[in-house]
Image (cartoon, rainbow, N blue to C red; front, top):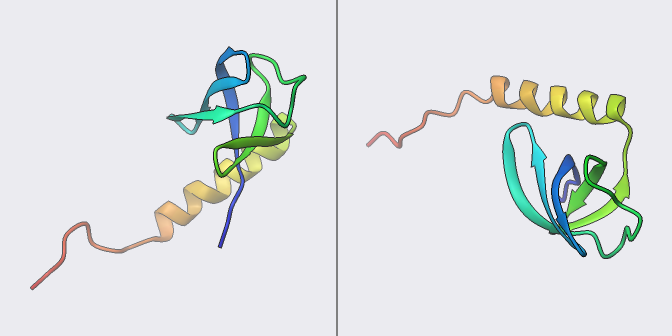
Length: 80
């Protein structure tokens, strides 16, 4: 399954960005969104910003992701 995650552009130089989603940061390219600006919320898929998203939709998605993490009761270590 492939997911696009909403993230905020926190650094931008040319088409190279650093984005932040829920405290996690990674590099992404904004080549597909030439009008993307610092502070914009964008959907990130496979290392590319593929569309802009509004704040409310981003917050809803982040809340759903947080619920998934809360639901996951997988132990952190393998028992043996």
